[in-house]
Structures are given as structure tokens and as C-alpha cells.
Image 1 (cartoon, helix red, strand yellow):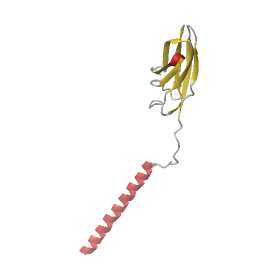
Image 2 (tube, rainbow, N blue to C red; image 1 turned 90 degrees about the vertical axis):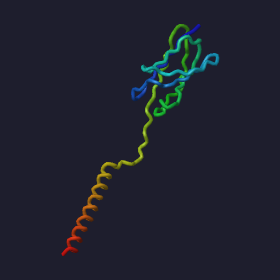
Image 3 (cartoon, rainbow, N blue to C red; image 1 turned 60 degrees about the vertical axis):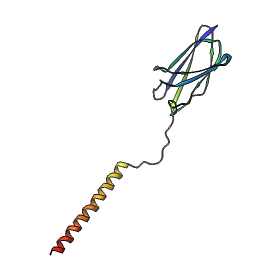
Image 4 (cartoon, rainbow, N blue to C red; image 1 turned 120 degrees about the vertical axis):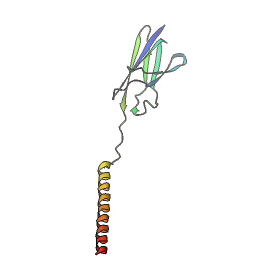
Length: 131
């Protein structure tokens, strides 16, 4: 007496491939699976009963808020579908709203002004010394 389990992955940014899920359940069943390019995992031939589907925290899912674990009941001769959705983590604002390019340009112009003033002063002094 067996059934199937299908995990469907969605995310707020549309990325669905390469996410890892752990499925645990009946008689010590404990395996990990990775989503395909469509964000799906199909597990066939599972014994009937309840299974826990958990998303695994890894480098692929690090920038997402992971969904809560879900319980899926596999029934005889059918496919139970579990949908798991991720939201991107909010990147914290550092409070630095400065424009680095602007400050670099201003520093460069200031340096040019100082060099230009020094050259003019040098020429003026040299001209005075020659008179």
C-alpha cells in the first residue's frame, strides 16, 4: 500500500531550482531531495502515513526566510502535494545613504585645485626671483 508525495517550491523572486528538502516519516523514513528546474520533487512509492517536509538551510536558501515544516498525509494510490514558499530576507538598511562617486569626485577636484594653486604659487615665486 503505497502513495506518492510531490513538493512544489515557489519563491518571491521566482528562483526554485536547487533547494533541498528533508522528508521524514513512517518507519524511520528520512531522506533529502533537491528541487529540479521547475521547483518540484516527486517521491514515488512511499508507504501510507504522515510525513514531515522541512526545507534545509544551506547556501541556496540562505537569503530566504524558510517556511514552517509541513505535515503531508500520503494516501493509497494518490499523490499528495505540498507547497513550500520562500520570501527573500529584508536586507537591513545601514543608514549610509551617501553617494561614494560624488565624494570621490569632490576629493579629486579638491586635490586638483590644491596642485593647481601650488603650481601657480611656484611660477609666481620663480618669476619674482628672476626679476
